[in-house]
Figure 1 (tube, rainbow, N blue to C red):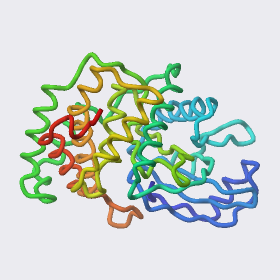
Figure 2 (figure 1 turned 30 degrees about the vertical axis):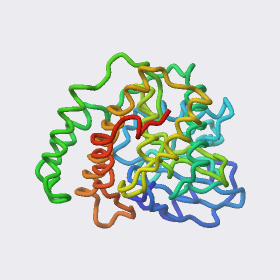
Figure 3 (figure 1 turned 90 degrees about the horizontal axis):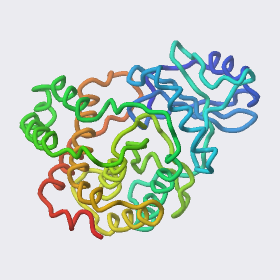
Figure 4 (figure 1 turned 180 degrees about the vertical axis):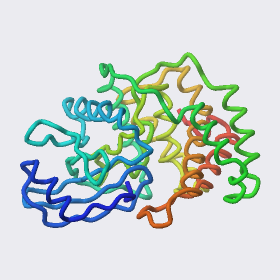
Length: 320
């Protein structure tokens, strides 16, 4: 979440008149994240999130995302629906952007997950994959191999302004991952961004799964690799936590499970995940507007993870 587009109190009040949610009491921009503009909105009828979809999100993809949220909520998962206005519409236009008023879920995002919380996150991902077995719509992964290769070329030599020698490190890793990427694993709808800041928790219980705007159709085990990379290291990528990794994988196995082929592919899938996040963070680092209310994230944190997946034995990273 972030704020790239400001919304006046008058515009927000006018939007709320379309809904049965009461009148505006307060609204506050949310700085976390890098993709859309988000506001915490309090009304006389409750608390909500207003999301404005910025240029990185293709407006043509929004029906997919909204249908996905409804599908998961209908199956009892803790995901926030986009609220329908009095005409039944979920999508609006606010400040020249497509927008949705979204349910608010209670809980906090943890910054230093415990072993129990990592286990709960694995269970939540497994539950998500169970619920998505019968989800038919498809969306290509714009940040798969082709996407991250294109992004690397767009960043070019500027990568070395972030970290000396980064362009060559990224190039070597891209060549290896491209050559070894699996082609026969099961494909499904995946969240593709299940970081700790996209999971809400109260104690050790998951109370919300949010930010589905990278969700796509891709290798299902890639979702496990992304979650592993984001939950099992310190935020700066410097320290790996094998106890968290074991717990996360155990939680996932308890709810859904991995085939032998999927488990064997986790190291290369994790290296691809690290490339994807290192490059999107690098692009944002180089191109975020100076006046945007957004917290830039350090690409080096995923370069360190990338190195760990390259250099450490698979059994140490993905304990049985």
